[in-house]
Image (cartoon, rainbow, N blue to C red; front, side, top):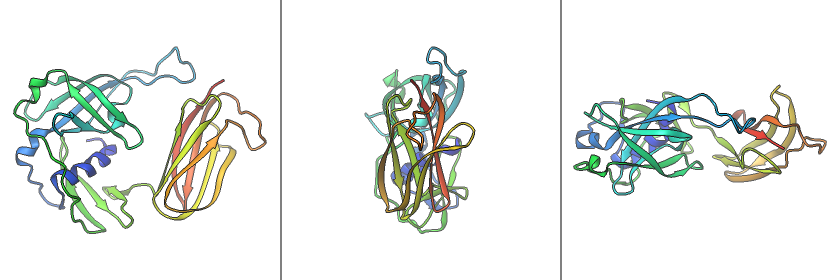
Length: 254
């Protein structure tokens, strides 16, 4: 199972329930958990007429009814060929993306052959499970269970790895005239947002000061601290909150 699948597993915990670390009884639910296999190819933002090498990856998805199979957006992003594999089957079937939302890292996919899901009972959304802080829980995935930990403030960790107190994203990307830098701040703290070039040098400080929990939107116009337009290339926006950091890549074009 991909380590990045902790978000989809957290949602799955809401649907089928979570338990303190021990065996998870899946029963009929197992048939609704799928392996999502993807052949993807990312674009080359510096040379749009080219593409990055083709690569294969996989993740976990689960059938939620007529809406389709729910998985992570990053699992199917830039997917050229997508297929899903049901528990007990040897041959995957073709699928396509029905809806994708990168802001919450979720996507819905549907299989090309509706009959493939015949007899599969969908997993229904339920109440948020009653969990205790600082205790590990086991949640199911296609390739086996994963352990996550609910921490104070609602953060989730997998195998001791905690979710970031601050997350940053940049759009539109590539940057042509300007881009919005969106921050999700989980708790109050000292927030500093900087833009770095490929050599690790700070070219612009977008924000520095105390931040409250919530969403923050900043703007970068592609200029450095002197107000001069930076050269084309790859840059990085780093958000730091009390020592915790989140990084987003942004490509500047003409």
